[in-house]
Length: 389
Image (tube, one colour):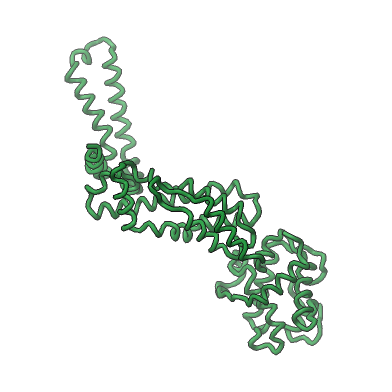
């Protein structure tokens, strides 16, 4: 009989926002009328009785309802369907038509996305953690990932899960509760995933989490052992951190270190390229002329620190110069290898950052995948000249 009670409550009390808000005041009003009928003489007598106190409480309640009802009605109008459809008793599901069933599916998913898969509460806890852990947190809390994560629970799968729970009736959100498994998966990934895995192959880490959180007869469960094994497989495949994150993860990079990377790469792969002649090669000057170089003297003196934002702006500036044909791309430059190092820097460093969007146009959106040998050479130069992470 319980399933019919739930169905009746849904169709009557939750029929619309008005019936929901008026239900309890209506019950109270009915009790009040019953009290008047049962003990009219006591209520009208001059003595103060418990019945009179109750009557005064009911009257005060009616006044409060009259005052706050319009505000409550306005507020609940925005969330009524979410309240109505975000949970239900599994045994009563078969009594509803397909339209109601699809609304249950829609709002249960919304409830999962907004409540179970929400990692915002950990932002403060991780605000002083290493940058790679904060990157993992941001990636797992992104709408794109969460939508992908929950996509397997389409309507046919949803109906099937509810059907399997009919014999063991209960609230669907008790069965489809992703909160604890998802949070545990995040902490396992932050503990066991290596820095290169998170920075270079975050998609594989995400897939490992998706694969190891499944709906079982006992609800949503995390296969913690399987997740650790899958993350270890990803760790074995990825060993180097790409240039973009190597620069990001070093809190401060000096100009000297930055130039050393260019020196190191250039000497090994670019016929002895010298960083101090960078401008001469790319602006058409035959020799390096300091007074003609107006980029905040990025290479001299070498001892001045570059902050993260300054590094972003410098890379954005290189991109800007390439767009204006001051720095020629390798398809136009006779020294193609020399142009390649600039393209490596500008194509792999921070082009989606707020700094670039703020200082330059949105036209620099395209990405380029580097040849593994080129990436290895760049990482070798970085390993040699940047401090360890």
